[in-house]
Image: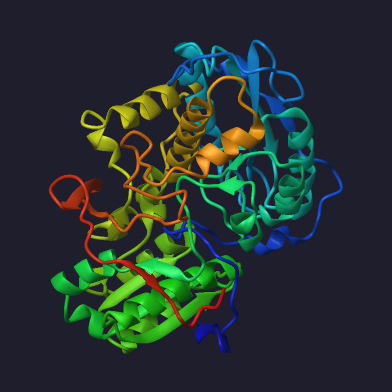
Length: 438
């Protein structure tokens, strides 16, 4: 049960992403908008490329495919309650398309992107998906908390849909969907928790979890809490903040009164930064402050300031400062700067780029005269995937996220690697949570 202000709740939401990527203030998006999605052609920024696929697919009866171009659709929440929510996903796809086109495109065709701002709104997502069915060869690399809206439409028309992460059960289960970072709504990796347990055995005896009072955040909390409890964490406080919470001090005081040793948060970085500052105002910090990859962003350091010092976070992708060791990461960072100057890299951009790589590989495997059906089948048959080193190994075929991880921290206001010295640790398993039925 999770405490929300003075009352209790134990609601359950749909599945969410492995890294707690999602956010507060999303419930405000429930009211459907009358207008359709904005469609922005970004082919002018498409420049360079990736894998050249031999042969020449017939453009006959293949939407979005001509002798010279292949059109891909990107659906992402850009406006809405949290402006710029998944701008990183759109920027990542622009960067990938530019890179692909610089090497000659896919199958000798220039990649053109048409983009939709889905506004965290299921109706707009459905409209965008319907247009994509008609005008694009595939949907690739977007990110939306409203992807349930277009799931049935996309499945009916059969458009290959390669999502960085499917945030809803409908999208996750749709026959036309595949992901480079798959999820299962009743599974959670044990590895990061085992590492915390090994290194901070006293802290986990009095653990606390908080998040935002939204179905996505609640589901994230439940999956992590059940898994951590299974390996020995003892939770003595679990709380949810309302969609908009002006005063976070009462939550901090309650945790302080319970002598919390381990604290984790599952929602957006803005509220988390305020919680950390509220802790410092009370001259108190838990021994371990362990968060998701949502904190791995320059904005978090700016928001939290000195209060971010010492926080921990697991990653399933390389650190930005390791680009000299990971060629694919360097490509992402270089082309992000070329196509979106000044944009900060983020996990959503990584997932978008990885989606593009999975699409490349599927087209290559499909061979000459590829069709939507063939490309989708090849993408769904990839059993081990790293996006050429951009991700820890996942299995799109088995819909299994990675059990591997690395831990980072903040030291002197900068992100640093903590564990292991290089690469990933792959201890643990993907725990099947019996309390969550699917």
